[in-house]
Amino acid sequence: MIEYFIGKRDIPQVKDIVLLLNKKKERLSHNDFSEPYREYKECEKNFDEILEVAKKQNDEVLANSQYVVRKYFLLFCNLCIYFELLKEKRYKSSWDKLQDCIDLAKMVGSYIEMENRLEIPKVLHLLSSYETLYPYTVFTSSEYIISKSHCSICGQSMLSLSCQHIKGKLYWGEVAVEVIDEIKTFQAIALVSHPEDKRCVIELPDDNRTEVEKFKKIDQFLELNQMKL
Image 1 (cartoon, one colour):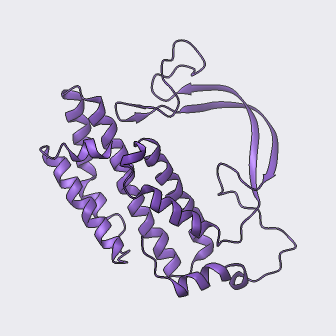
Image 2 (spheres, rainbow, N blue to C red):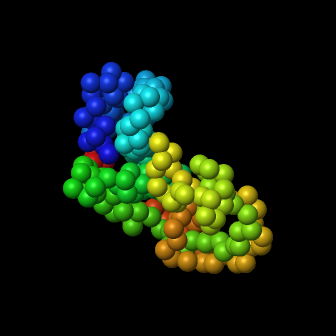
């Protein structure tokens, strides 16, 4: 996906995006975390224009690749925010942003062939290493019954034959997702150690450690290592 997009540099908007993306990555590599969305905002309109070009040229691969590159670009923007939070020792606040980065990296990687994933595996390995330094080990996971939902693209139920879209697949620059319209009932809230979403953290009541003690590992790690990809 990313290689296909880069190969379209004869399109002015693509060329501009590639240049600004490289600029973003260069700043990040030099620990410049300021204005995390600066480069992205400069070319955000270009992504929309490329989508229109793709539709006019009947090029669905280009439409889908602009979506993947957009998320790839946003990954580096979010990494800047995450590293800035670490730099400021705002470790508790950094947890959710770390999860945002991991989610973006996994999502981008899922749309790229294994041999063309560039630095995505390296980024995921680094973020997973950071994750182990946090004190969080218990999370909540909700169980509920969905009574009504629809496909984000066609509006039909994804369980019906009238919906031809596969959940998670890209169609003309849009991901097919199941939109929940109605929840029949909540069955339970479970305490788990490996949920799909780790943002719902449970802090145990008998944990009397101070914030400094809780984040001692990550603090020591950052003192010994520079924050570089």
